[in-house]
Amino acid sequence: MITTLQRIFVIVVIFNSGTFGFAADEAISDVPVSNQSAAGDPSIPPLVKLWEAQAILNVQRDKVAHIVTDEDVLIVQSSGGIVTALNAETGREMWTAQVGRVDEVGMPASSNADVVMIVAGPTLYALDKFSGKELFSYRLPSQPSAGPVITEGSFFIPLSDESLVTCSLKTLRHLERYQKLPPGVSQAIAWRFVAGEIIRRAPVAGSSRVAFVTDPGNIFVVDIGGIQAGKTQFEFLMQSPTTTPLTLVNRDQEYLLAAAANNRLFCLDMNSNGKMQWTYPLGQRVTEPITVIGDDVYIVGDEGDFWGLGLESGLPLQTADDRAFALTDVRMLVSVTRKAVYVVDSAGRLVTVNRQTGNIVAQTMYADLSVPIRNSLTDRVYLSTTSGRVVCLKESGIDFPIYHQNPQRKPIMPEVAKPAATAAENEDVNTQQ
Image (cartoon, rainbow, N blue to C red):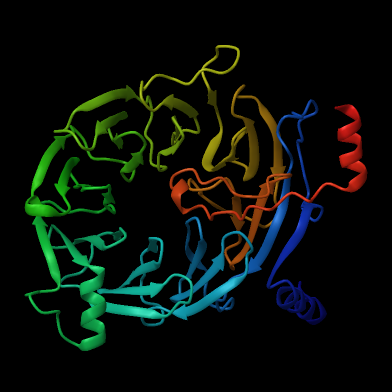
């Protein structure tokens, strides 16, 4: 039984550890470690705690509903509709806001470089990503059936009337400010594509096309702009529904990955007429999102198998000693660095895997951080509790995050001039010459 003194102690700890960073690498000394690999792997730096923060929510009645991260912010959404934005690299609380009515069902946030978009009930809310200021709210023409995807200038969202609609962010901001549409714009919706089938998964948007999948497993790829805006470029008809969200990979070309209920993974060329690059038999159902880091495709099966494929070839990844890269007893992929893959097993342990050899380096048990956060955008490792305590880990010695998917968003680091040589150093150089 928890005593009154213990309750007071817990409250004091939460307030004192709300949000703070560390100037130097700090070892994870307050977390018990179990089953540490005896051999270890000196080539992979140990994980250290970068920061710890507490999201704002009513712990007596609310819990964490969604946690979404991008390169800049980590968004924590509570079941009561409170949204907290934390700086992804420092853990500093940037802003907090009530989005929608209290206890209104909200969908996971979507973001671009400047805007965070959240659907709560039938209304879509757009907030400034760095201040939390509401830019506009827009009541959708019908109930959304999945969350939106946002680009730099537009957003796309499926509706329950079996259609996909798109709106311009600039148009809706003008409508919010002046209470009327801009001159020459007849309606807020730029275009609508009627699929005739329900869409239950968020679409993905590339440079010029948007793709979405319907309940029966039909993938539609539609032009975003130009004279063909809202027109179908191709359809890819699978024999069974998809079991994961679509994954879009932008490398030299844009690849579209889809896992089907018949245990097959398909890779399509997004900007062709539906050309299939390759297909791979999965052998088991896959419901975890497909993760692509560089040219490596990582897959987590529902039965606990974990393996990798080459993005261009669709063939199994090989380790340094010519074995197939594969593991068992994996529940979720959390993060990938240059040298390691971090996954969570069925016991809730964070498992460190050498990316080149496929060997398990360490298995670490975190006592109460039971909510791992999938991060395919950077190399940071995020863990959370259901009450909104978030911890960020990084590999020791790695000062700046690696941007896996959008390297153009990486801040430009200032050039530091080298210190001028002293008179003694110049004399030594002259002597050597």
